Length: 629
Image (tube, rainbow, N blue to C red; front, side, top):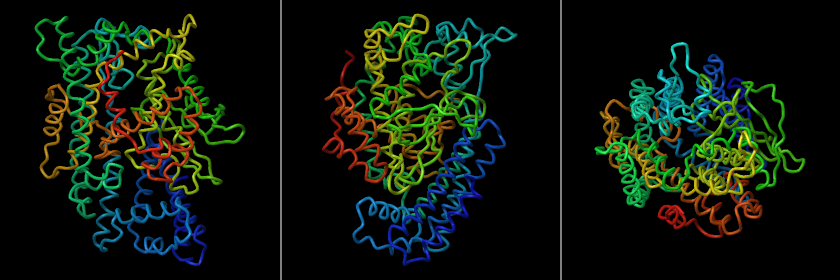
């Protein structure tokens, strides 16, 4: 449904809610909920098409649709008459879910500025509309700026054989290597040529530069002005206020707490990298950022006897996809049935209905391989938000895994983990898409909880029994050796101090850019200083990580949420460990307590319902301090 279809339908329902005060409470609230569902589903489909459709004209039209829908919803968010009509709804005798929906909606109206004067509300609307356009511009610049190198095949020594076969040399005898993840990650991880790793690393950090430096400055300036109009000193203060963490001071303290906890292990990890580099270059005085993944893999192979490339022949894309479908079906008591979808936007898109017995629960769409004009990373998008008795949820995985062709498409273990992570979002969307109110549908919890279900599902990739169910050698059919899985798991634990501190660098960039006065702010200098504070690596002049840091659009100041959610996920996983991670009992209980409610309760209550207590920091600390087995 396009903006021109959704907006009139929503407007009519809102006017009925506003004017027909005598309606029974739930019938009246249903009108308002339906109106926002129409707008939300239209906006979700526009966002999806903007990011995946192969036709640039369709992407442009979807972008325009998004702008119209956002502008209309912004107008509603500062509509004082609508707010007052909702505030008059009598909640006497209402259940907790309905109370939470109304209370949260009233809070969101106030956070949008509905209680400001007319001039201020007009400026708020203008700023929000402008920020939508700025965010789209920022993302478009990242999406469309795919850089490449023409490389002599000799420089590709160390890359897996299947990767090389998929990239034959051109007429000039050279191979094209791009900044897309399917090229970038393998090259910086395995290419023996330090020169190639450095060139591609630098190129990857020049994407969307210089255009996005100016776009980012406008984004920060408008967000800061909007925050002040809404009564907050900074955008970070505004953005964190309604999250689990409770405020920007708490978010900054959390970043420092995690950074301090990971500090000693990071120093040990970095010292190990430098020592390993000196075996190749005895005079080396520092580990460069393009060395990190390469020497980490060297250490993992030599210390644990587990070269990550050894797992690739067992991890063919189609088998992994099917294995994850089987795993999640068995855990959560569901089934997947492949269906034809003539309205798919690309021939490669695969579609499955999700069932419980014969009862349909929703539909999933898998758009899994890279192409020009498509979103460059890995994410779950919404196609339809579900609602009990009204509509079934539909979710989309948009990924960039290697494409099967004449030769099998082989994955790294880290890519399998990524697929499980994104599938966690998909399950949350579908299983949580049967709530009473559409406003609570799917991944509708506080933003700093949404990653926890996905990070929890990543844990299953570490189990030999799980992997041996679908990880079979593409030539021999033999299952992946359990000993290799254990060694790979132990090796994956190496470097977690560096990984956590790198995440805190991203979190600090996200937060600090939104805590500073944007007037005259040198974003490049700030990011350079944060890199050298939180990681052991020096800033490299001429690189601009923040110009292509896509989370600065959607997540703004909230990148800390990945680590906040991981702390919770480690605690949630302890309940599975106690009964066996393939036991359906904790999985079904988790489905009922955490996934199915969607956003119908505060996230702290969801966690408490499953664990029987509040979340604890202790499991995360144990994981961070533990040594590989």
